[in-house]
Image 1 (spheres, rainbow, N blue to C red):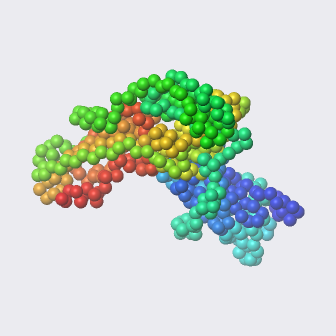
Image 2: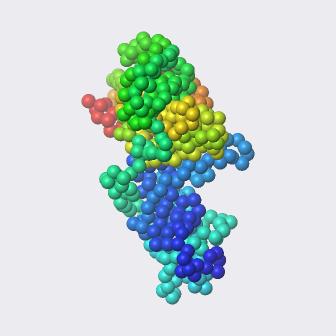
Length: 525
């Protein structure tokens, strides 16, 4: 017999068995799948368990889900860190493609171990066994053992030297089917824990009065009236970025945090603050001035990123020329759950509880502001009340870390109000399009020039050279690439202090108008 004899279960062994990183099988034959990716409403706590359950031949109804703890480990070459459990970030709508074979492999390996234990117990070949909905079945003898009975022994079986074979897609029973969303009952009953709900013993509550205008800096503050309120414990400064500086792992703005026994008391204390700020270097910037700046830039040569054929010659020979302009404003994410973070800076490490799309950046942000190594940062990820790209920028993590440090390492929950969230976002970039299109005698497109100006969401991203800022704004293969012989794309980067970032999944939502059907309708007018 390999591993723990099955009779040990009959003698009182009742603990759940964790097989590998992701699968926990209980003696009652129920299964817990620990999901590496954060759930932000996109359904990965249902879809990713389906991948693993498929190869495990599990009864999907018996499966419950837990968020896998964040774990980074040093790379073998000593340069930086890597995920221990596979990628634990979500962004760009790639969770399924990232994890498709990875989690299937994990499920197949657990199934292999369960089959080995059952085959050894029955003294048959593993090839004489099949699996079905949490059971291993002896094909010839008709005997059955539940995964719950086999799990404790399966834990002790070593990993194979080569990957366990995966199913052929025509054998799928779960992948490609409709399944009930995991956790929906807890959501409906109000039992699901979001970051806004999280609590830890001894936790205080904080809100922050942030700079009222972009890039303004804190000069001084008078907290006497706030501290006079019973239950208001501390008032501390929060350091933001330098004007026009890099926002990586820093708060968006300077601020003053009021820490109290409750969120309501913190809000009341914030109302009593008297704060002096510097003038903002953005004080003369407005929508009108930005538009004038963009128009001036677009009248000059831009960064040509695609140039097929000879646009100038083709447009000169066109029978008809169509010119259009389109503008799109800055747009906030407006997630249903505002931003927030619990931080507890201890003597030997830091604990973080947060709604996030990028748990690795939470680790690195906390490490930067505490001086601890990433191994000393513990991050617990809750379900998020929406992400849409906003929670890829964890400016609220260093805010909470700074406050916890400043009040002597006490645990604190920094929570934004809706007003805080709308005024302090990484907005979708402001964009302007200009098109000049030449049609031939038969109405066919013979020349296409697209100019795009934007405030660039890659601006201030570490390590991105200026010539690559266009990448998330203008895609080289957008319509009508390779359909028009003479095609030119020009990009114009517009510098501004307005923080920008990804917005609701697609890399270039501001280019949604580049739809073939839409343009065909326009050109036929």
